[in-house]
Length: 207
Image 1 (cartoon, one colour):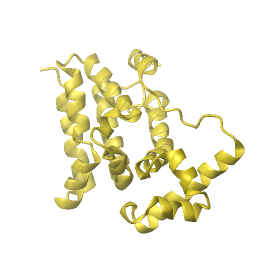
Image 2 (cartoon, one colour; image 1 turned 45 degrees about the vertical axis):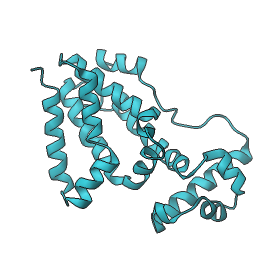
Image 3 (tube, helix red, strand yellow; image 1 turned 30 degrees about the vertical axis):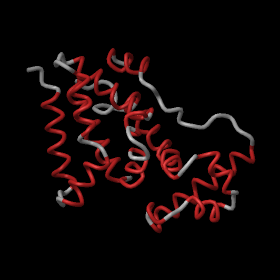
Image 4 (spheres, one colour; image 1 turned 45 degrees about the horizontal axis):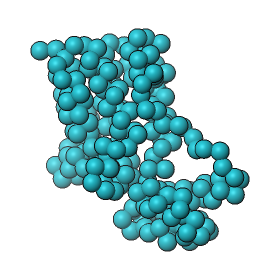
């Protein structure tokens, strides 16, 4: 593990990659609810699906569903958790350039490319989790992870204001912004990726 990754591993707010120990019936209800939500969201779109719909298809009580997830944004966050945990593991332990062993600017570019593809692939779910309430995107544990990872990489190349540069990069990678570029402006994903990766490299240039 290189010095940058060692620092990251010691301080980044990792997702758990799992759930706390729970009763077997609670675990079954959680799995049924998440499976039903994923199927309904994929079939009908997130906006058209209610918590009542999920409870009915999952065969669990509405009270159980609300207590466990709070609201539809909580369901979205739970569905994203496993995918985000996998991405975090690749950043910390996977092969370069996303993982350790590559120059910091290359790792930042790899993160930008990978995270943009992730948001684009799960656009509605990420958007819901980021906009559930004012500032929801900034309060999430995953955002703190992405921000600190970017900040550590930017600090290591000696650029000024690495925290602000990390914020600027992540602001360009929000679901709302990517939706605008992809759906309103009809930008192809490869061209958009090349442009944002180029920006990440400019942000990592110490001048």
